Length: 289
Image (tube, rainbow, N blue to C red; front, side, top):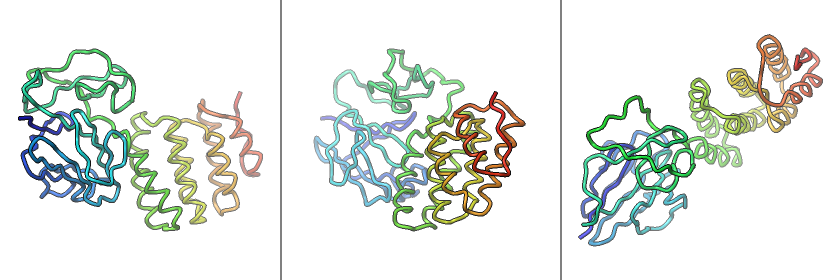
């Protein structure tokens, strides 16, 4: 008779016969403190030889092996459940070589240096091929290992933002953007926000600025580029150009260029700064030599 478990970070949870509810609420069988999870997000039902996952009408949905789930779905060994920004691994434990244990077998990804479950062919955090490094045993200590980065948080927040912006729900879009902004600020402070992520969150912020006709989020975008010491890319510069008629945007761009001239070097497309400077009379000519 097979038994089932659910692996999350360094822990494994037994899945007994019947229902196991997963969500943000303390009354769930497995509680995960993640604002992107619903209070009762989903459940796993174990019946005889099979286990089935059901989404409980969660706001952000559930994915199995990166596929959105809308109907009850049978689970197979090593299936990956993505709930909110978290990834959990479903495990079938039989009489084979896999032994029951209270904590999961983990190893460090050779590329991003974060702990990953032993077994998948690719790292769930950076997507790079798994390296054949030894697994950590139960009596070993993972010194200096931090919680894995929430790889999908910006993507999930972006999906919510796009829906709210498309529907013109500015208060809802503001709420989701604030969450994305908090995540981006943490990443840029730890030098973990790459150019693609910066451009993505900037695009969302400038879309909201355009709908609100307010320079507040423009100022935030430029401040993030200053902290990242990176010039705006072409897409960000195009959006900034389209917003120059909004009061305060030209002054914010001019101030950013002055700071750029004082503190160098900035990485990125300096030509976009030159183009913006030509459009903003108060802006100095960027020193890009």
